[in-house]
Length: 217
Image (cartoon, rainbow, N blue to C red; front, side):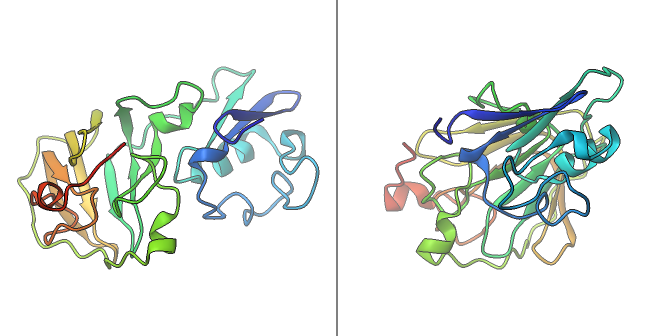
């Protein structure tokens, strides 16, 4: 099975899915206490070795949407964070959380409705999602955010994300952008974010994708 397909790990009451093409190995699952995920074990994920609440907690730590879970008990569901947020990672991607509506997101990765890591170096082979190409290409941006935006009327609700062909990420909906240092930096309900890697006003688009001939596909 290719890593572009979701692999399922079934227990008596929980079924965890992992989509390898979205995973950038942050390690939130493997380093979590308990026996749900254990590297080198076969299978590495065993839902019956943790309570349903523990499974839900660990899966929700995954920042990329690679992990998701379904329970027999339909009262245990992942829900969107009350605040839509974008964290600009130090030399890395945009970590997005909230009620996400990512255009073209694969149907077998339901975690992307709540969590995603979006490429901002321009080199990912799985655009608009990060695949850690920023590490191989030496992308450098420490995540400073110089603008403040315009206060929006709320903090949650649907957050639409569209990757414009050969252009930026268009974000529509209430959202707060956090800098690489963790500062709440920008708030608003509409913004264009750089995904070519060369904007001089990162994380915002400044039109540089046109000058450098950025190709998204």
